[in-house]
Length: 109
Image (cartoon, rainbow, N blue to C red; front, top):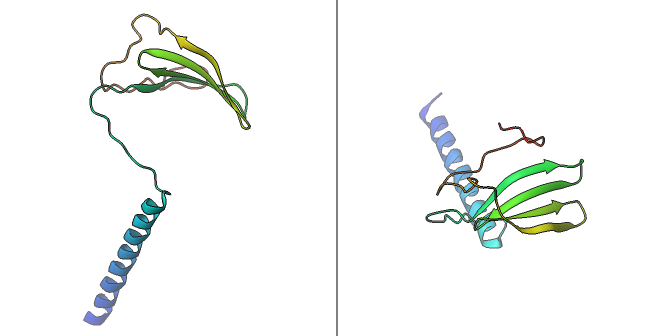
């Protein structure tokens, strides 16, 4: 291979990278890309536990500001089952700590 083949390769690579960058910027402008907002300090929202009821429905226990809410998510509608649940003693998360991941049967991963 000679120098012109390498030059064509580099130019084509730069063109593809520029095209990817332009498409990413366009997706952000149109609102298609997710926005990442980093919070400072302690996180206010966490998913405590998820339980799959069947293939279409899940129960999710969500903690917001040290208060837990039980939510039923389904394919056609979502419902708040119970709200303002006090978390069990010693269940408050450390600042910046992620909640413990559990399987649908409550086992810790």
